Image 1 (cartoon, rainbow, N blue to C red):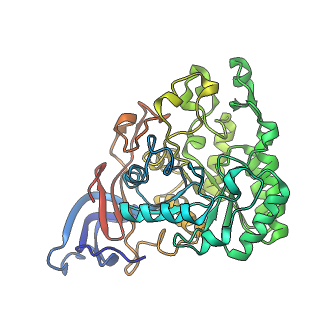
Image 2 (cartoon, one colour):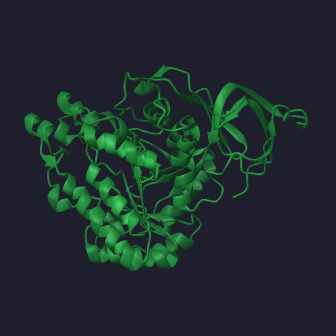
Image 3 (cartoon, helix red, strand yellow):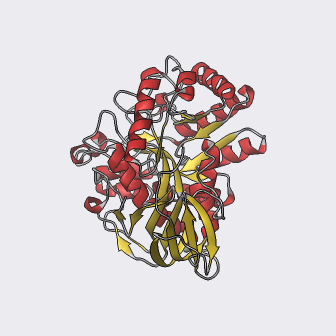
Length: 438
């Protein structure tokens, strides 16, 4: 993919990875041309200059788990509005999940999503192909056709639904190994979650909500680790949510199994005490767990047991959330709030450096997806996909002010210290101070 023809760009007064004194970064032809206090001295005529006031400069973020709803539910999100939310949140590449209407279970749909993303042109939009036809878990899709199509699909998932049949999952892993692609699993044993809407524990029992046991997730994680081992394939665990999943990932990686995992910002920050209000905005799959789960997930992310952060950005219409808790559609917005949450929980506490944050939000997800031009180091000659963060820009989340067509954020009214103040995509400044400018 070649960058658009854009004028040279000079980012003035930035601190790569939050280290050292501010420097200037010159971008020419979509790549970093110079870094240093005098990088702008030889800037070509017509260079576009932006003074970022000492902001932390990071590689653009990569989200392995985004719901853009197009095709089929353009009333809740489109590829255009989701891309706008992405760049306002510092993301330069997102992977659009397959549970659209129709599902992304064939080359026609995946190539269409890819083309629309290219036309919007704010960030890379990679369609995720379905593992099974119609996400029904019964018949494998033509994974090879999607992988070899224009979209070059590299991740396959039935997210929203678990590939629960072990034989189907085994075959999917075997095919994926031959194709060099990745299967991402929504780990949920459906026979253990019928009617479940909340974490199985004291809170759900007190509130009269049907419980979702940890074992529903952990049993699939264990099974798929073993299947991946025997198939010689890679498997990725979507939205890990329990202490037990962390323990299983530790075991599996210790056995040399090619397993990776992601965690969402909401599972790092929120727990099931939020359900006391019965507000449907807090309904999500897997459900918000207990405090010890959130603490275990944070430690696992810091230690590398969990590889990366993924938003599971899931827009819903107001009527799908403003209803009885059990009837609410599961999912939360996440693209614009991911960086502030991770920064507040792990960077501001000293558990992570900005370079560590770049690892879990950019470098590692790009590696997992096999992207060669995202998540790259901030060095001369590298593609200019970048996110600038002001670590001292306190702001308050207001759902109606987010770029998404939907407003179902669980962080309404919460304040954070850090915020993305600029996003550069393939050499173009596409977002500045919370506004899309491309």
